[in-house]
Length: 470
Image (tube, helix red, strand yellow):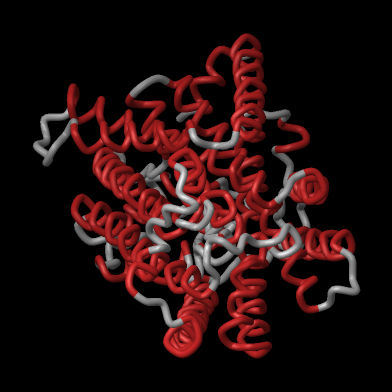
């Protein structure tokens, strides 16, 4: 989701040069014709911002604020530190595998095929959860406009839209995504202008009140802060998609790394500004009620700009999350198809494609059913934490792979070959441990199911398990 829930699914969907019958890993096919190294550093940074979106922290603001008792700025900055270390590791591993660009490849080849499979299985959970949390958020946002229509009705409607569009094989246009990102950027500027006016004329903070969004002694608790940071990481999810462009970038050894780091830094700064002004407008001692927590930011917009800004921001985020949900379901269907084609999942069901539309129809319908079920079984917060459970397994794996490669195997000289990935590994592990216990238990159950499947396939066909992690 482009909560940014922009996630890796949008990287899959935005690539219009690939037919739907090719799996996402086909980007690594070295025989693919027509790829030219024409993208510069600026193009990559823009691409990264489009993936993550300028409104990235707005959809999760209320959840993080309640979890951390305010301090959303601090959680965003803590998450940014973790992502910067991890971004360096992604950039360095993209040098080693310039045509692969995936966490499961890095871990599978540098550490062990089983580790690569676990990372890939965790990423699959992200793909499955992304459309669910998009549908949950869209349903809550739609109720802001038409509250007389029930949440259940909106949830069914949005899942049908996601599924119907993907059954038709409609791909997300990169140009449309760029225009949407530009539009979101304009809305962010409009919101900030209204917020600054409100702060100056109504809130009028004085002295230490300017620092309360960073540290409020009345509400501060370290455990809650890091729990909030474990959710706030969702702001940055999707930055790793830059590594998928390795084959089309000028000087990828330099530019992939720089673009990944600079994208995280720019998104972090912009996100910190957005949540800082929001907390000055709506102080931490006023927690968000359960009925509005998922769409808290648009209620802040109402406070600073009235009904006009409320509706504008609500519509902007609704469109963004709809696009992200459609793209996420699209990417998940392709990933399941790829696993079915490789016999990692039953090929007859998951590996089939509709002759008429070229769409993995079974996968799309299954995902639609799972998405609908998830909108009633999960809350937005629980879904976001589960998604981050899988994402952090990938981040931990990439940092570990970079540490092993540049410490023990590579002859290439890089700055701080041990310190950077080790710091990334430790910080990501620490934040992962601060996820909600129920999220860790559910995520652990998902990993256990994946391991059972792995060993079942390995016993049936010994070469399959290793092929999965490739």
